[in-house]
Length: 203
Ligand SMILES: Nc1nc2c(ncn2[C@@H]2O[C@H](COP(=O)(O)OP(=O)(O)OP(=O)(O)O)[C@@H](O)[C@H]2O)c(=O)[nH]1
Ligand SMILES: [Mg+2]
Image (cartoon, rainbow, N blue to C red):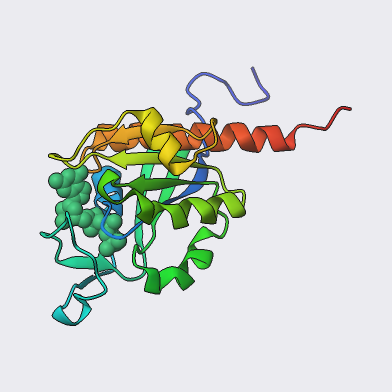
């Protein structure tokens, strides 16, 4: 053929992936930094500072006594879920005194994970309220620290007063597969809701 490019030998066009921004939020010391680090395929960016004696009265370390550092700005990581779907993960700081950073981090977020510890479930209320108020789709993931009581999903759901359509998963923030499952659930949930709001209203 004299004209046109031959299809044989032509390289497969690279797929331009859709990139989604997902927040990893939750109370102090629930394992957010651990979660981002467990799945990130790039070396995660961390902003850890040492927990100090001075902070002891305000930093409640019950259950995470081995913790020596805390996030002061954010965690950042990336995971490719599919060839055409990449998630950028932004872990929030957990302590109340860094709340002012959340609005900045939440800009353009498609969805969020609220990570919880059943020993201190009440610490996740603020994060859940935050995303509900802003209509940012989120899933709840219970980080199962070993040696802690295992509550059925329905009990956790009731305690957190979750909407029935909010995905609730049990996870291990240190396990890549487990965290990946959580992120797939959040991405699917967020994309479903996004598609729903784009649909024309037919009344
Ligand atoms: N045993 C166990 N330890 C965990 C797990 N996840 C996190 N940790 C530990 O718990 C502590 C808290 O983890 P981080 O990932 O720093 O928690 P965070 O939510 O980022 O904490 P802040 O940024 O300070 O709010 C660390 O000492 C982790 O090693 C888990 O699933 N099991
Ligand atoms: Mg952290």
